[in-house]
Structure formats: structure tokens, C-alpha cells
Length: 486
Image (tube, rainbow, N blue to C red; front, top):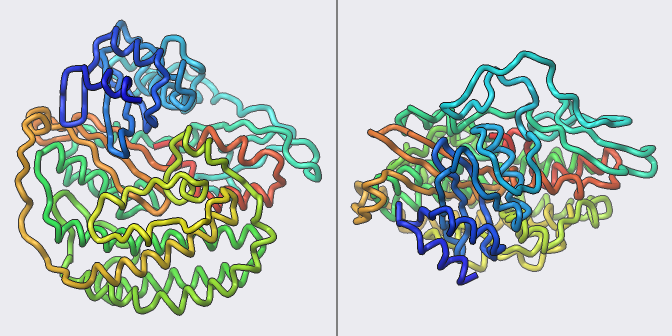
């Protein structure tokens, strides 16, 4: 691993944690099988970028495209294939010696070929690509419930479970990176705040941090604490939603009804403090709207949560038999594909970006032995994380102040190139943004939602399941097709 880090850091420093490599060094990197976890890969018309984790911190490598081509990382890092296919669909960049060069998102319905590229041309009219052949397809819409043609399942008779599965993606792609281009960061916030219904706080927070790093300024500890309060309340809300979906799929209507009622009660607590039900449009670069109301909100939620948790914990055992062993994600697969968030932690990958934030007790962030990797571990861990959020909120409310203006940070490279990487630990996992600014507006952007790295693992997680079991797996993962296809 040290050799790979040295290779990357031998390049030209572009920004604080971004190094530009020449073709030979990039090719050596592609032949070395880096031990660093890969977060993502993307392109523009001039270069290819690969974002790694170095000791849980981002490390970005890039190299120039040669005639629209580059050496493929997937030759030695299998999960890179997913990102290379997306880059090829959006920019037309060709990965040489790649594991898979088939289209992932471009299924023949786009009006343009390579829509993110300046080389884009109008697409030839034609019918969408047919979904993978299936003897009895089941369809799932962007929120993961049954409804729209996003997946096709190759099945044996349902009594014996699925023989195999192929994913027909491309129906939920929104092109968020392209939609951000040319917008001022403040103008972009409403779009960012609607990327995911489970991350009205987390997506804006990750984007805001990327913009703040690009501009070379840090925010006050008080502002960090305000953002953390919002993030933990959102975590409770999103976990309740995913618990309810899992309970419905597992035929546990009483548990589901209590989670749904609890989520509505939480929304009511927010409105009682004159804040939006789902905490929308509160986070922006350098600011949190209505920060003066957050102390009372945090205390109210912390006081309400114990009774709600006691009820759910009492009902939880009624679902155990239906969830144990279902949709098991092995620890080695979680590590290999960079699965973070609750899903990763339930599989033994203890990755949590909140460890780098103020106000969090490491003991609260521990999965506490709930690492079996199946739907039961994920469900039980959600309740544990709700309790952890309650504890964190109680501590954050103590000694809170509204803070002052942004603090200056001496980072000449980031300031000169106006480029930054931001992240947030959302309820469903780690969210990442890379943003490049030009004259105060977004020149380029890349986003990674926690649903994306799960996409190539779905066939193995769903294999052998009947329709009811498939619904349990998807709900317990908190998986969203729209999140995977940003």
C-alpha cells in the first residue's frame, strides 16, 4: 500500500489531496493492484480521476486522456469497472484493457451520445435497449419498492428461488453533475437538497464542505456542531423509514406502524421548533439556517426518543426469524467494494466518517457486535444507531453557541485551483462530492451516493430469493436506484 501511495504522491500536486500523474506512472498504478479502497472514478474531456481512501482520508489521482483513452483501473481493481462504464457513457472516455465496456446508464433513450462531453452529438433515434431476458421479471422503482422496470430477474419457479439476476439500469439517471455545471454554489443548493429523500441534510453538507475546501476556508466549531445536530436527527428519521419498509416486507405490520408513527412524531417535533419537517434547505456553504433553534430541537428529540426506542426494541424479536441469514453481505465483499455506512458496519467494515467530526463519542459509533452482515444485523444495528444518535444529540445541545464567521485557512493550492472534496456520513452511508469552481461557479462536479457501490453486489445478495425475500433485502439495505444513478 505504501508503494501505491508513493506512486500517487510522486505526481504534480494540483490541490491539497490531488496529484496529477503522467501516463507512465498512471499505467504503473493500474498494474500494481493498489491496496487503497477505491471510492470512485470519473472523467472530463481532458482527464480521468480516481478517488481513493488513504487512512480514511481522500486521495485523488488523475491523468490526462490520450486520444480520449486511458489505462483501465478495473484490470486490477474489479469494482472500478462500474465507474469506468459510467464514465464511458457520460464522456465517451475509453478504458483500455477494462473488464467490462458495456453501457450501464445509456440504454438508448438519451437525446445525446456522451452528454457530459463537449464532443457530444445527437443520438440516433431508436427503441431503448431491451432489459435482460427474464422468464418472469419483477420491477422496482427508484425507491426500491415494486413498480417500475429497473431490474429483470432470471428466475426458476418461485418456490425454488432465483437462478440468477441481471440488472437493467439506466431508467433513473438524472445527470446531477451536468445539472450543477454553471451554477453558483448557493444556486445549486436546492438541487443538491433534493438528490435523496434520505439525505436532505447529508448531501447538502457534503457539497458545502467541497465548496468550502475549494475556497480555502474552514468553518467554526459551532457551525460544525449545528450541522452534526441536523445530521443525527435526519439519521433517526431515515432509519425509522428503512425499518418500516423492512417490517412491511417481513410481514410485521405492528412494528411498521410504530416506526411510521414515530417518524411522523419526529417531523412534528421539527415543525414545533419552526423548522421544516424533513430539515430541508437548512445547510449551505458557511451556514446553517435557524441555528439558534437547534439546541431546543436537539433536547426535544433526545427526550422523546427513549420511549419510542423501548417500544420498537420490544417488538423487534418478532421479525428475527424472517431476517436472520437473509441478504448476507460478507465482510470481504464489503471491504472490496468500499461499502460504508450502516450496511458496511453491519458486515464488519467499521467505517464511519463521523469519527472525524466534533461531538461524537467513539463508543456510540461502534456496531457493538452486530456484524453478521444479514438483514437481521442491519435492522438491529439501525435501532442501535438511533439510540446512539439520541445520546449524541443530548451531548451536542450542551454548551452550544451560534458561532462566528468562517475561519480563514491557508491552503494556497486549494485556493488557486478552486477544487475541493467534501464528504458526509449520511444515514445510508458515506456521501462524497468533488467540486471544481471557476469564477465562483461550478465548472465540474462528481457525486457518489452510498447506493452506487452496492449496485454490482445486488445479484449475489438477491440470488435464491423469492419476491418477498428480495423486498426484505432491498429494504434492509436502504437501497435506492435513483441514488445509484445520479
